[in-house]
Structures are given as C-alpha cells and as structure tokens.
Image (cartoon, rainbow, N blue to C red; front, side, top):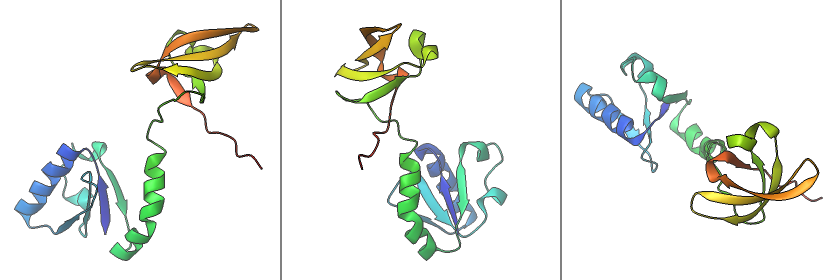
Length: 141
C-alpha cells in the first residue's frame, strides 16, 4: 500500500489518471492524500513526482495505526502563527541575521510587534509575521 500526498489539484489529476487506467485507489478524509496498492512511481509521470510525497505502508491497518504519527509529523511543517505573549525568533527581514529573540506584544493582520534587546537596549520592533518563528515553550518540571 502506498500513501500519496500532494496539492489538491495534483491529487485530483492523479485520481483521474488512475480512473482512466483502471488503477484501484482509496480516498482519505484529507483531500490531499490518496492510497493505492500499485507503486505510484511506476505510473505517475516523472514531471509530477518531485511535487509529491510518497510513502510505502505494509497495509491499510498499519497505515491507520500510524495515522496519528503521520498527523504529528505533518503538524511540524505547519507554521505556527504568533500570539501575544509568545517567545519568537526573528528569522527574516533586516533583523533576521541578528538571531534576535523576543516577546510578542501585539499581533496585527500582517505584522507583529516584538519586544527584544538590541545592543543591551530593550526596544519594540514591528516585524512581518512571515519573518518570525514561534519557539516551543520549555516544559516546566
């Protein structure tokens, strides 16, 4: 069994191709995933393969058992949006190369205001949301 992940339009294209060629596949609850028994690398045109993620699973039952693990894996790639009080690292823009970390004081639609220290002085800077990375909070033991 193979799990195929890609953009929804690409998955739709692959499903149409599978239907036309009579290849059996199963849809999942997530529209950007499908399952097939056939090795998709032998069927899907080469120009589409780089934009897909293909994982072989031993069987459908094993896939269902690993579904939670797969979901957690995919969550790692989702960008976490900052909210007030989050600790963030500035990763882009004119402050990106400085490795600054700070506390989010306010969040707008496209910009957040971060309080940080530059050369020993506490300052507030406005940074595009795309230029910050929310840091994981350390667990308190």
